[in-house]
Amino acid sequence: MKEPEFFAPARRFQVSEIATLTGARLVDAAHSDIAVTRLASASEGGENTLVFIDGKRNAAMLGALRAAAVLCTEEAASQVPAGIAILATSRPQQAFAEVARLLFPAAIRPQPVTGETGISAHAIIAPDAVLEEGAVVEAGAVIGAGAAIGRGAVIAPHAVVGAGCSVGRDTYIGPNATVQYAVIGDRVIVHPGAQIGQDGFGFLPGAAGLEKNPQIGRVIIQDDVEIGSNTTVDRGALSDTVIGEGTKIDNLVQVAHNVRIGRSCVIAGHCGLSGSVTLGDYVMLGGRVGIADHIAIGDRAQLAASSGVMTDIPAGERWAGSPAQPMRQAFREIAALRSLAEGKRRGSKSDG
Image 1: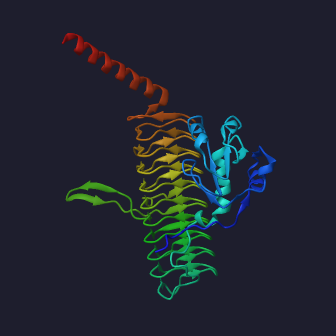
Image 2: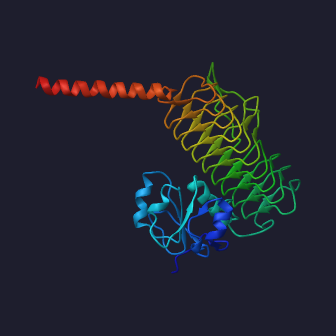
Image 3: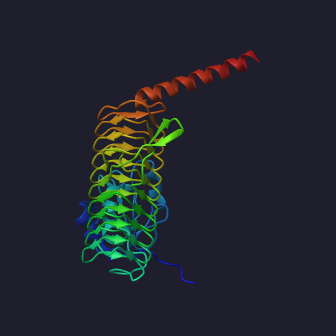
């Protein structure tokens, strides 16, 4: 059986084209016509491949490099073996990603799973749903009453778009994802298994035990947002849960009711945002960050992985630890604890 190739290059590039596209300096013009049809890591490389080297630690890999061309810094260029085209740039990884987007455009946005275009005969669509021309609804997908699907949107197999929801143009709703009580903008990507708009975790103690507090808000997802597989976004209790334009959310993230996330935030996997948390614009959360309810995080703040946030964080600051605190302070405390533990170990040895 032939090994499958899931992503074929859209075309071939000459090294001179890559230099023009990325603004990199082609060190030796004699290499202008070298062809690139594949991408690879610097540790693998191979025939007709473009690789990149970024950072001083990775520069050690240059001596054994095998590739058609390499994107690297000016400082590293002298270490590249002969015969490999050198494209010198201050931002090798960003230039590499720019080429990758052109070489493999199909990898940027998920494609229809079945390869179908138009509306599958095996989809379930309410009579009053509105689908613009060019929308794709694949087999097994369900579109509820009064829902609206924009031009170029793809509703993948077994995805559910609930009654009254709207899905914007060129948006992708992945297999087994569900969308309820939600308004979704243009060019949004919702990966498989994500659950949008289920009720938030709202309970009040009553005479007979815990009583459910109705969740009557919505989820608003603005343009160019990406939501990872098996991530959950609860609808608001009274006000809406909002995810701002351009924000990217990883897999297995919990976004609770009434959360408001600003523009172009980055949220890594396993994060948990409790009810009514507010993130400003350009906030970055490392993996497994947990934020207590009603906390506000300022614009461009950054939180290290596994931070536990119990208090508001001002704009532009970098915090770490659990409970989280300014990063320098957290690292000083870690160093002090290590020093104390080392001192105790040395003391125990001398006593023995």
